[in-house]
Length: 164
Image (cartoon, rainbow, N blue to C red; front, side):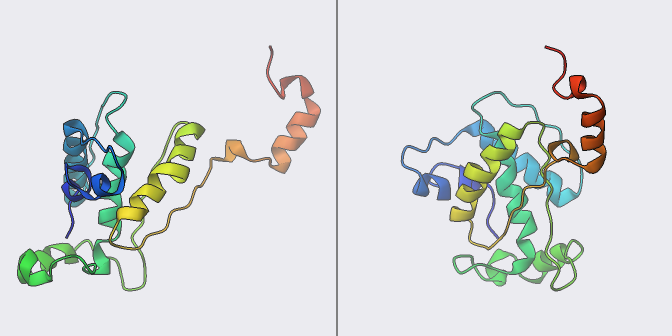
């Protein structure tokens, strides 16, 4: 099974896809930590500065985990080469029933990051991922107009855009 290193480390899939790709040790370390947390079914809190590549550091292991039950991709070694029956048995307790895909939720604080993920980062990961996956954007209810919010806005037009 591919690991985050196969994508983010020097000579990885992203380096092959993007001319000028610079592997970042902090990004690889973060991706490993995220992958371990997912595998161990535990929480992880990570703080990283600007330019580390946090989005790819959590997207790559998340997509790998979500697609793990698809079986080996064309360019992956057969199960025996990955550790035989013991390796596949370890994954069985996390598998979902047949026909039901695994899901990963990525929650962001800003619309700008949502747009970056949907328009740039997720398509990039999809281009180098050996397995198929899909992604959707679900915005919070504050981004939609409901009848209740419309009614409140019409009752209090001064509050619609806040005080300036």
